[in-house]
Length: 274
Image (cartoon, rainbow, N blue to C red; front, top):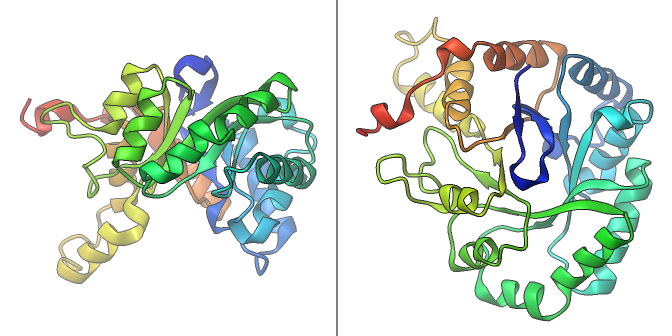
C-alpha cells in the first residue's frame, strides 16, 4: 500500500480507502469485520462511513472492526444534511457510540449538489461554528464536506478556507471536477487551499464496466478494467485517497496491487493534451 498526505491535516493516508457506503443490514457482520481487519492489516488506514449508510449499520460494523485497531485507523464520517447545531451534535454523538470511539478523525457535512441556501445555513446559522466547537472539545480532529460535483455552493465552501478536506466524484468518465486540459475545477481549486482530496466513485460505480461489457464484450474480455480505472484515478496527483467499496479479501488484494504498481501510473496531462 502506498500513502499520501491528506492536505493540511498532515495525516498520512492510504491511497486506497475503505468506503462503507454499501454496507447493509443483510450483510453478515462477522464476515465484514474479518474483511475490514484484513484490509487494515494490509495497510488500508482511511475508513469512510456515514450515519445514513445502512441506517447506522455501516458505522456499527466499522466500530466493531476498529475496536482493537483504533490508533491504526483514520475514521471519517458525516452529519446528514443537518445544519442545526442540536442536530449536528446529536448526529455526532450517535456516530461516536456506533463507532465505539471517543473521537472522529474527519467529520464532513454530507452534501450533494450544494446550493447557496445550504451554505448560508453552514456559515450563518452556526453549522460551521458547531463543527469548530466539536473540534475544541476533542470529539473531532479535522473537518470537511462531501459533494457530488461543482456548484456555486461547493465553490463557497472551498473559498471559505474553513475546511481541511473535500470528498468528491472523479473518475475516467466524470471529469468536470478536474479538467486536466485546462487545470480547472473544484479539485485543483481545493488543492490551492491546501485541502485534502478523497474520491468517491473512483472506478465509475460500474458505469464504465457496464458500457464496455455492452459494446465490446469480446474485445475486452481479457482486460482488467477495474484495475485500469483505479490506476487512472490514482494517477491524478491531486488525489489523496480513492475510496473503494471492498466486499472481500480479494478486493483488498487487487486494489492494493494497483496502489503498489507505481510504474503503471499515467501522465494524465500528456494524455489530455498538455
